[in-house]
Structures are given as structure tokens and as C-alpha cells.
Amino acid sequence: MRYDLAGKVLLITGAARGIGAQLAREAAARGARVALVGLEGELLEQLSADLDAHWYECDVTDQAALDAAVTSTVDRLGGIDVVVANAGIANLGTVAVGPVDALVRTVEVNLCGAIRTVSAALPHVTAARGHVLIVSSAAAFTAMPGMAAYCASKAGVEQFANVLRLETRPRGVTVGTAHPIWIDTDLVRDIRDDLASFRTALRRLPWPLSTVVPVEQCVEALLHGIERRKRKVYVPRSLALVQALRPVVLSGLSDALITRFGGRTMVGQMEDEVRQLGRSFGRTSVGERS
Image (cartoon, rainbow, N blue to C red; front, side):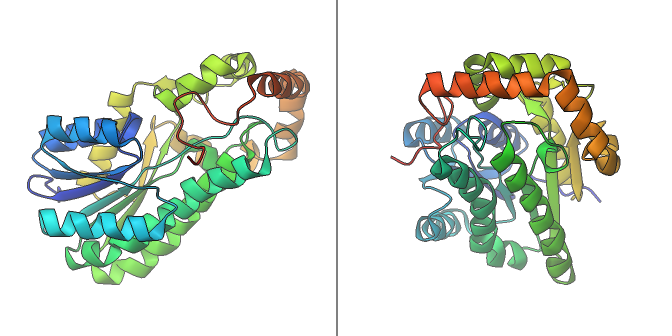
């Protein structure tokens, strides 16, 4: 049966930009009441005014702030039917040149932030027999130089959701993970603009791993997944085949092919570019703690 979003309360993290912001717009257009959570308070406030939505500025790695955001949402909107753990960042560079704090920060936001978000909202979602959607990535079942912390965090997100699904099912709560490929958001545009090595790699990746998807198309798929309470959402759908072939994608043969067709050169170029940039995250990223 279709899970009608009209009148439902959706709490969305990472809601200031990209997937989170567009998801809030489309959900509100379908009659949902939306709570926007994330950093960049000015953007959240502006979006909230456009959508007549609730907003709360906080870092998803701060449990006290997340708890306060959830309490504020429940006080204002009466409960939470759906939580979308969407907040995510990606550090730039390899393990060798990336500061360890940037690697750890990526895992803290992407994985620990999802765990903290779900834990804070779960009692209310359980009371509503609602739905949890955690945004993972195609990076959960692929590997690419320069994305060690990002891939690790997104694989962790998927496994967290897989176990959570089993734990919450007896209580009527459904859990899904979303696996987008490159989505045309500030995060991806920043990496593409900063690193020529990334642009080269993107051209060389096989279909569908080279696909850049408009954010509107991604959000449509996510909303369809929420409305059908689906356990997996792939953007594009062809990524389901890539996950099914995960043993091949992550095999020694795949490692050899990547290295042979430019992997070694790309790594050196990427490391040089990141050193020259002098920063660990994209221009519009909120990865760095203030």
C-alpha cells in the first residue's frame, strides 16, 4: 500500500543544500510537514520560510543538539513519521595526503551522524509506525582512490540500516537505504571543480558508475521509496546490478584493471592537486568544524 505523505511529519538532516533541500521541497509539495535540520542556518531559515517548515540548526555529530532538534520538531509538529538521515560530506584526497582529522570527520558525519539521528528520532517514528530512510551511496559497494573514508562510512551506513530493519520490523517500523551515484549537487560539483583527476576518472568509469544524475531525479526516486516503504532505493536503478556484482567489482581483477588503466597516475595527480588546494573539503562543504 502507498504510504501517503500528506500530513506526515518528515525530519530531514543535511537539509540546507542538495538532496536534503530538494527532498524538503518535493515532500512539502505533496502535503508533508517538514522539519529541516543541519548546519548553515541562513539557508535553512530561507528554505523554511519558502516551505512554511520548521528548522533547527545543529551538527549531526552533536547528540545533545540532535536531541534538541528532535524535541523541537515534536513540540512544534506533534511527532515524527519519517526520518531521513541524509547529512553527508566527502573529504578530498588519499589517506596518505589527507589529514587524519578530515578522514575521521567524514566517518563521524556520514556514519555516526546517521546513527545519532536515527537514535534520537526512533522513539517517535516507532510511535507512528513510520519509516526510516538512511542515505548511503553507490560507494557502499564500490571503491575509488581518494574516497577511503567516504566508502567506508557509506558501507557502514548500509549495514547499520540492515540490522536496524530487523530490529524495528516487529514494531511496525520500516527501514530503507538509498544508494545514489554522483548527484548534481554542490558536494559533487565542488569535487569536480577542484580536482582534474576526478574529472578524468569520471570519464573513464564504466556505465552506470560514470552517470551524473540531476538532483530532481534523485529526490523523485527517494520519495517513491518512502511512499512504498522500500528497503532499497538505487539512483539510477541500474546500480542494483552493480551491487549484485559486488564480488566482481571489489575483486583483485578489478583492482588490477583500475591500476592498469590510469589508477596509479590518477592517485599521484590527485595528491598533488589536494596539496596545492590546501584544504580537505570542497568550497561549499561544511565538513570543517568552525
